[in-house]
Image (cartoon, rainbow, N blue to C red; front, side, top):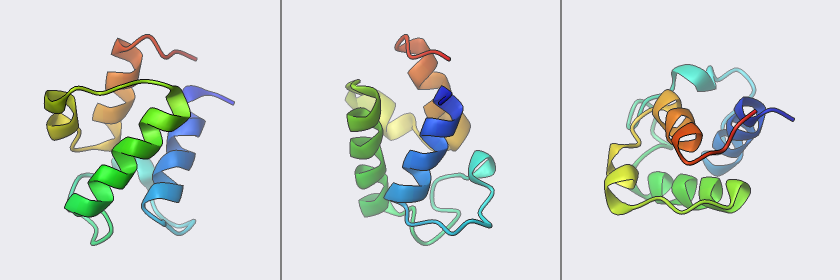
Length: 79
């Protein structure tokens, strides 16, 4: 499974999204489920799935699906 597909699955699981959600266009606080508590659950789920550790600045800056994907790439997680 590709990094993109795995990350979509993590977002869907951590934020309890339905199948109609356009995950790749999601932004922080754009939906009720991605609030501050949902954000921390999402960060933890991404770290667990990809065996990475985000620093505080990365956690704060992770405000969109694309940002999370790009951060993973910067950490060496690839296709």
